[in-house]
Image 1 (cartoon, rainbow, N blue to C red):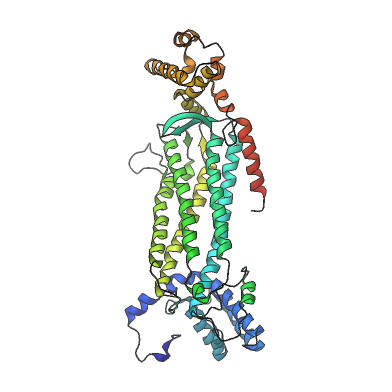
Image 2 (cartoon, rainbow, N blue to C red):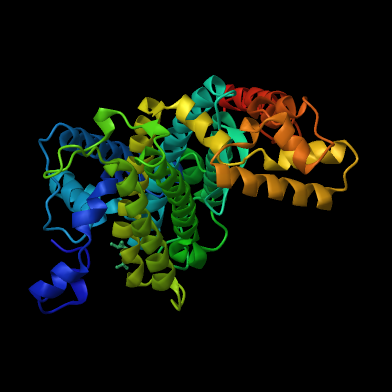
Length: 459
Ligand code: ARG
């Protein structure tokens, strides 16, 4: 049965019917469709647009449909055009003419706008709790590794020593911002389009604020044409998810590097690694690689959505049906990647000795050696030159600055005394850096305390 057969004299071409239909993917928000219909019918009765008896008959049938789908006695068939048609057709087939009153003062245009918002709202909440869990995993590693020294890099060259807590703290900030963005998007989108009709509202005395309240929105949308054609919140969500994926991808890249034979900073747990069918020695970081790979897919969804919306005249256009598959896929991808990455990170082993040795071998204390000279009255530019010479000397002898004898130090500058060893030790290099946000013990402790409060707060 079609909802719009009245003005047609011929059947639709079969290919057109398939091409036009969205039931194969919008069935995903069947629960939201029922939830919206229950709110609508409640409002219609409150306004005296339908009788209380009609409301009860429709609501009972909708609740029964929900139960039947849940327990498998009713299957959503692909014969309907979309989930909205399926629900209305099923309702009418069960309770007859009274079911035809459900669509009073409503169009599929405001209905789909509502369903998608209801669906996305739940997904934002889920994404957020997955991110919160990931932050907890990072926080735990940070607390246990405030003295795990490692090289910090710029240009992928060893630069200055940091700690694992500090390095992971950078990702804590990224995922924290991701949660803020999701919450901003939620707040902005949380207005209810129901009752906007096809585009120009309706002549029935609907109470749109009441429907909005029933569905836990902050209020009703202010312009009926915008209500049925607004997909900004999907662009925002896709952009938020692109950033989440970008952060996961950067982190994955580091884990792939750290897991390589050259670095050996980490061992990925067997449960999160895969083998090679030909090379028995291999333990591959496939999960991290897949997360990195799937990032492109989410970026693609964002580009696709923006392109679909570009140039659409007001108000609803069928192009908008294209918003669903790509958004669903991007949500599934982002959610899957966050939780897999979280599991991989929680079980990873950090090779502390290897990290510290690596920091020691890369002249990461060269800046501190120069600072030592500056603190003893040598102008910074001269100090830079002196340490540069020492580095060349050490490279030639394949030793670290700390391995030089005091005589070797003094041969380049008489300013050096025995306390140079203490001044350039890994511990000193890190611990002297106590500006806010730096890796020093006091500085990182302050941040970890703040993070702890954040993790334990309601947000
Ligand atoms: N399946 C449609 C969509 O996803 C629902 C709205 C249909 N509205 C219409 N006027 N054809 O956008």
